[in-house]
Amino acid sequence: MTTQKSIQAQVKETSGPTQHSCPNCGHHGLSIFYEVDQVPVHSCLMLDTQAEALDFPSEDVSLGFCDQCGFITNTAFDSQWSAYAPNYEDQQSFSPTFNKFAHNLASRIIEKYNLQEKDVVEIGCSKGDFILLLCELGNNQGVGIDPSAIPGRVKSEATDRVKFIQDYYSEKYSEHVGDLICCRHTLEHIAPTLDFITSVRNSIGDRQTPVFFEIPDTIRVLKEAAFEDIYYEHCSYFTPGSLARLFRSCRFEVDDLYLDYGDQYLFIEATPSTSSSDKIHPLEESVEQTAQYVQQFKVLIEKKLNWWKTHLNSWKEAGEKVVVWGSGSKCVAFLTTLNTIDKIEYVVDINPHRHGKFIPGVGKEIKPPSFLKDYSPNRIIVMNSIYRDEIQKMLDDMNVQAEIIAMGDEISQL
Image (cartoon, helix red, strand yellow):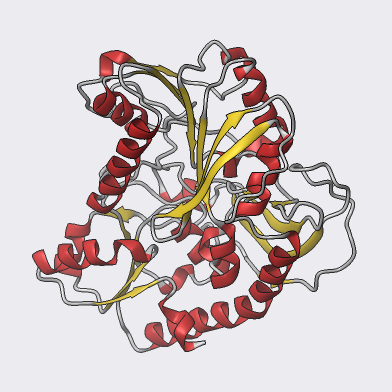
């Protein structure tokens, strides 16, 4: 029988520079401050059997901080595991909350850049929800580039106007630039960040095509010790300052920098320039400020991990039925970092393409929310607090009485 891997999270005293170089600025020497041993190398690959899930490859996370540009990266990351494929299931558009956000975002981008009957490109388009939305709302044409793309998966009246390329983005696709390049929740999966943004800039060349990138905000992760947002696929962790500095170094002018979606997501809008700009955006923090957030993380993370371990153990001992809502990367990080997979019996998710599949490194079968009607859990741990109201409504509609605990609720008790 396959046994659960031993996983241990460690906070390290930030020591002198290591031999690692920063992939964001090239500075030699990063300070390691947080490690998690043996975590699944992918969180969103859907597996057909429990044995396959439990035997899934695992590697280490070792976060290093650059005191020159403020960037944070997993120094233990190995790109050999970057094997995104059609069975990589990260589609979020089954959530009304997320759909409202995406619709408002697309509408704003279309209006701001006058994207009507234009050509748009999305790098890392996943299953194509957003590129299709941009083309629907603006009557645009589009190209989506992603190895996990599945043409026809998302139903849309704009299907005939969008071309999907099942590949990783590179300069060989420089012909696909159009009137806007967008890239959402992809840059954090790329280790050579400077090389990647340079390739985007080189692809644009002399054209004045604006770019729009969206990624998780790492300041929130540091301030809240959000360990559930630290996992292997996310090898690159950006703050507003480190993101803006990267784009400026690659000959982009930073036009806007802002937060949205409960301040979880960080956005940058930039246009090509002929030289490095020195214009600083008000949202940018200094490298020294980021260093302070790293120290804050180190103080809070042990308290947070201990809080969850203590409560999961006590609920288990009391015979309470505890369920995790949300089977994606946050769930995998939550259960494996805490090393308490045995304390949770079931995981539910609204994405029908996940139902009946097994979670890498965790081995739990993913159930639909309707499962809860018969299971009658005592507590439901929600991986993302922004979905709390949406989930509560679904529970009310199913007449399921359970206490909701969202990630972040515990901070007030630490």
